[in-house]
Each structure stands twice: as C-alpha cells, then as structure tokens.
Image (cartoon, rainbow, N blue to C red; front, side):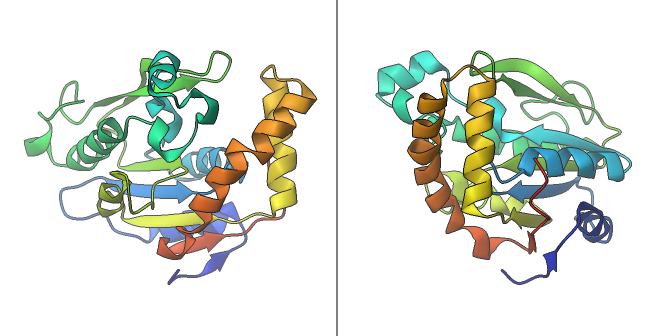
Length: 226
C-alpha cells in the first residue's frame, strides 16, 4: 500500500476529488475489503459527498444459485470463483469507456455513455438483471467489492480500470459481529449465521486481506460504522 491511511469518509472523498480521470474516460474508484468491513456504507456515503457520482456494487455479479449448485460451489457462495468475473470486467471496461462517446457503443451500454448492470437481492440471494443504470451524467463511479484487487482467477483484469483504490481495514471482531447480525437479519438462525461468518466468510476474508498492499490508500474508520 503506497498511499495514506484515512480516518474519515470525507478524507477519502477529498482524495477522490483530487484524482484525475484518464483523458476521455470516467473516473473509477475501487472500495475493497473483507465481508463486513463496511464497504457498502462507505461507498454510499462517498456517492453522497461527490457530485456527479454513481455506485456499482460487485454483488450483482454473483453467479445464480442454480449454477453454483451445478458447479458444487453453493456451500461457499461469495468465494472468488462464485462470481461472473468476465461480466464484471466487461462492466468496468464499459463504465470507463463511457467517458468517451466514441467508445460508447460497447456491450453493456444503452445510449451514449449509459451502462446497465445487475443488482443483488439479499432476501433471495440472487442477482437482479438490469437493476442498475448508470447514465452519462455520472463522471465518477464508486465500485465496491471484495475481489477488486485480487491478482488471479480473472480478477487481475480489474485493477487497470481504477484510477484510485481504497482498502477498508477493520478488526476481525467487528467484522464477525456485523456479519452475524447481517445473516440473522436476512433469515439465518444465530447458529447458522455464526457458522457461515466464521467459515466461508472468514476464508474469503483471509484471501482478501492479501490484496490490501495493492490499494492506493487505506481507510480505517472508528468501528461504529456498519
């Protein structure tokens, strides 16, 4: 990690505002961290603080549960190989290129500079096609997800599209507490929530932690942020 450690979302917004996009391209910002680190909350706050920005969560690129069952991966949904990695990389390329109207005819676009992407429904744990529309008025896109800086499995193609990246650092105890509460909120028993948070989620967290050094900056907030 080559940059600074930031202790507020406002400080991260200032760094982003001072980071130029490449000529003719949208500015893409990556918010990376382990499950429960607070990425979604930080990303949403950044969108509020940065005029002309939009949000793309990586969760919409989960493979369908039926596909995961066929592949034998349903019991570790959320691992790096349980996402549509090519689709995600294609979306990043389309978002970046949409800053240049000459490149706006690529896949994933609807009209000049508009990009369509899937969202994610946590109630049913399935992607929702076409749920996210990022129009030509968005000059900055905040992308949040676990594997944006992973250097294997096809994810290595993601990093080239980001102008600046942030790794969200938080204690393991806080992460686990948040994850267990989240899983319970979406229907798991406390026992099942704890098993998932300390099992598949924790395995993913260990892998994600190895990517921290590739981020431009670190975000370490007071651990009251959800």
